[in-house]
Image (cartoon, rainbow, N blue to C red; front, side):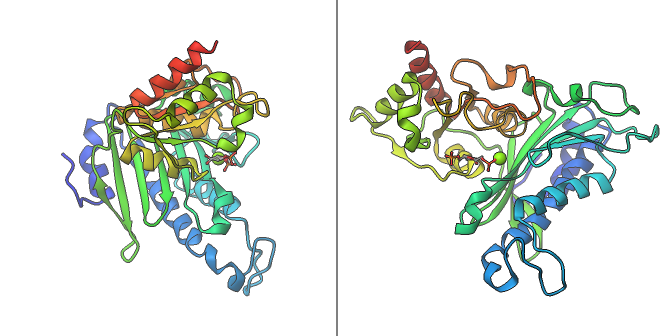
Length: 335
Ligand code: AHM
Ligand code: MG
């Protein structure tokens, strides 16, 4: 049973037995993500001090090179997951290829692979706008004790065992699911502890926010143009409100709480959209479905798409179920 104000550590221990594979390995993995998220949070919050402590490319007072925050976040997550020896492989937006951990060690009995976008929306950092970390966890499909292969990472989203995000916003939150609903934990920065603040998060079935980069309007498929016009039409509960931060985690988080749809469609400039299937869309789609929402590429459920490449892109429509279904209807009618 979850209680408000419970710490994430307590929550993980109490809920471990409700998870279908109860070895404790997944709990340790979520704990490592929690630790890395706190370290990254500390660094993200210093970003505004860049004029004082130096920008990326500068050397700091200790003679260390300052890193770009997305590179920093990537290193922290990889280091934490590697040092604690709890996964057998990692794929990251920041790495061309996947990383096999302890591939020479036959004693490595770890079962999980993690796919991660360590700092999504990082172009927002310079202007003090919130960014996020997104993660997705699978059981490997190749035999335990052997090096991981691409096959372990190219699994359909419906095989995820856990997924989550961290939003570094006005407060820092970790939101995740292990397939049994979605829970959100808020960091108390004074104590460095995450507390359950948003139990059983749910998308409202309907919403009145649409989030899309309308600067690309002329390049969108006809179905998307028609849906945007529908959102803007004066009728019933419309026009809807347009809100676009340009930071997927933040836009998604707001829409889950208030009700809304996030769209990154394909366009005549990007034939598959911009967002990555494996470590952006799949984890967000899993969370959305676990929170009564929906995620689609405009025609098909995101979680049923067969991945073909590690950094594959896919059009993304995600949010309140009735809004996503309405967008799909417009896409279908414009075919
Ligand atoms: P990134 O992985 O390079 O940070 O890009 C992903 C981000 C999303 O967070 C955001 O929703 C989208 O890109 C914004 O893109 P655009 O500026 O084209 O609207
Ligand atoms: Mg990204």
